[in-house]
Length: 453
Image (cartoon, rainbow, N blue to C red):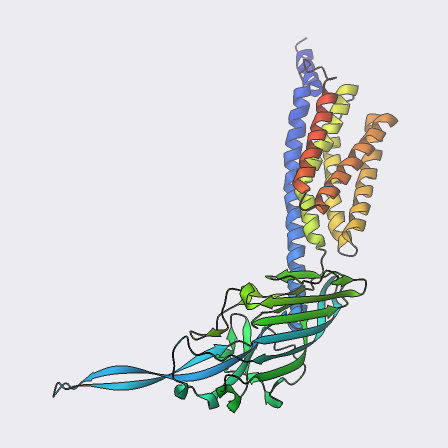
């Protein structure tokens, strides 16, 4: 009789609802350990992809941002310096000459760009690169020194320069020159220490000496064109008092970015896009002339992003974030079936089901590296749902329960996929879906006799 008492105790633990719930909870938390490793693997693969993309971009040519052309005019200012003779104590004043610079933006700036994108691959990774033809034209009309009240005699008209800034000098494949009033001036890199400033390289002409600048009613016309290889995006800074820009490309998935968006409603077509911008000086918070150095205006740029729009690793990582929910709900479904049908399930069988659920994420990542996310998700979910469904047939011994497991997992994985695809409505749809799941569980659990603990 003494030996039968422990056997009854063990049998009670095996059939106890409470002990089953504790066992399922412990197994769920144990499975979180490999799930975290899987999330780390996805992040590692994503990091490696970014390194490969950055390497391709660096070799081909980085993003293209254009800031210019800008008229740089030096001028003299004089400051009085008081000098005291220590021996005679005589005080004299001396005028000290300093050279300052005024920076003037064009009154009209017209930008036209034709971009031909392509995909570059290295191994299983790919990124978008492009060849572009950019032409810029416009005019300087107002050269206004009234803000600092400098005498025009102190303006060094024969020491003027045109400067031009860009983030990508490596990708330029043509000699760069600017035409000023039908005369060509070469643009070359400034002193290296001064050339790189806030991600922009500075190109400048030699000294210009044209009499038109002295006459405020005369226009100074300019034009330049160049070819440049780049990647990621093309951006322009609207420094013209009136800036017009047009970008034409065969890229199918245009992602317009920056402070200003195109104004033409028919910008996207079946052949790509033809985007147009118009920005006036009143639309941006900076003036046409600057005397305290050239400002950094990166935050006011606009353009087009050419990155490949689908990030498979990001979607895979979002799927893995729902891993605990998938494991918990799947275990809960088996628990309800086991409890209602009085079928005993061993903890090892729960463990096998949990490991099968984890295999979904490794399949998803590995397949998505060679295909798109939809195909990878479909293959991985069908594989895991099929494996667990047929495994449940041997456990539950009933075709009705096998169909229930199949339908439940299919709905669950479909629900997760819909949430991943949504952005603005992900929280709303997720909340409604979880509410429905909770209501269904509460409805089914009414049939359980919780007094058997």
